[in-house]
Length: 409
Image (cartoon, rainbow, N blue to C red):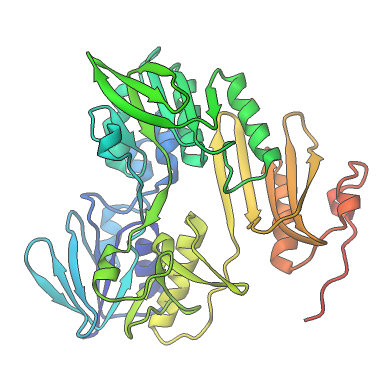
């Protein structure tokens, strides 16, 4: 009987295993997860779960019984320690080894932690990536406590929103000149910064953490500008890196993640990768996407490849972030933009920012403006671009936007 092993029981691993069954694979199927729980959603951890608005049972992607019903052997709390791609042998933390016919790596990404020399190993210093992380810091979210958030990306900003809503005193530091410097335009960053300021969050840009020290029952944070802050705990949100240690040690090619082709194949026959851990070709470049939609879509496309399919995966990037009562929806990738068109929404508190390179639409950031998001997403996926001058005119409706001439193929 053919045996497929999926390493990594997150969103991508679960999607890949389920898709294999849906496509008719009837061999042995094993899904290994290092965490002691069934696959669950990660985005709500820094949002509704921390706010107490989403209960644990609703966090799981599927009931654990589902995997048994589908003939998926779900093995949790088990680390895969090594991989021999030559004979496709998987070595487990319990000392056993498993032989497979095909292997899929869906190992995800891991948070970048503060160095120990900066105090990153002190009690009260947390990251936000796993269910265990969220549960560990839940005790800290009491009214009036002081939190320092290091990092002004989306994870840090979402954590700041939760803390502010829970009545904490929130300071966020970002070493770059502004928040969201790597992922959003100044217009979007300014809009979000103003929103946080309205909720009492102290955002300090161009300012980082120098060192943490214990001070009685609290922590003392010395910032790069010389400021000393007395705080109760720290959330580190300085980014993630792809989990490639297993693949790297096995000799798989690494390029900002496990390098795969458009079919999800790694540099070794019979070994595949998908999700946050994998980098893949896209529009003449190589990218890696950290998002739920990509994890699901790429995993499902890779499952089809593993069963003999030959349809390349074509990513349609989209993302979202919930902060306070604002839903930020993002379509496309803004890499290489040279101008941004700001368009007011139909309702108070709504706005959209449209990224262009020359006449070509690359991406849209929509704040509480689902109509702008859906319009932008549809245009980007169709390879079409609206005329920027018309887009900038609020009198021109989204439905009637004239389109720029399309490039010849």
